[in-house]
Length: 194
Image: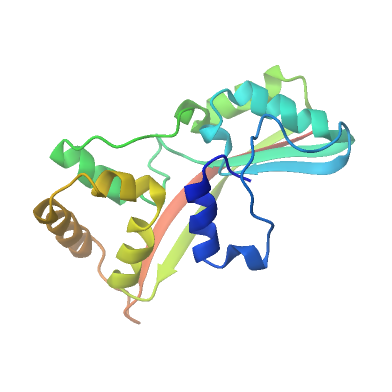
């Protein structure tokens, strides 16, 4: 579920509808009865919720006692975003780019604080490391630049600026021995019992 149709469309283009139901909706008004679920997870979502306290409260509302409430978010300020290399290029060139509205909650300390303030039991947190493999630089570029988070920035740049960014990234991302591009990222994760 996502409030932005562009994100739902992005997921459809990537074939995600084969393994999930995709629809627009609001994370602070889940279409579920109270205490009706065993688990609720905000996967890479909580920092997009304008008020993370309300997002957590809504997950807590729909999960039965003894159930699990969890979330994980890319570590925005700890350079954990999969598109971090693009952000570095933008900063180097003085190009403004949007961050999630509640990016602060991506910090592990803030995530732990939020969960502890919600009076939840058995709070556990960890960092999840992730890597993404692309067949070549072209695939890396096409997949990343088609995401709404980057396309909104790139559409305002000149072709020359885009070419310079592309060239710089290509130089920073040498292919591995099989010709693939491997990118690293990490997310901060937390879970608890209701």
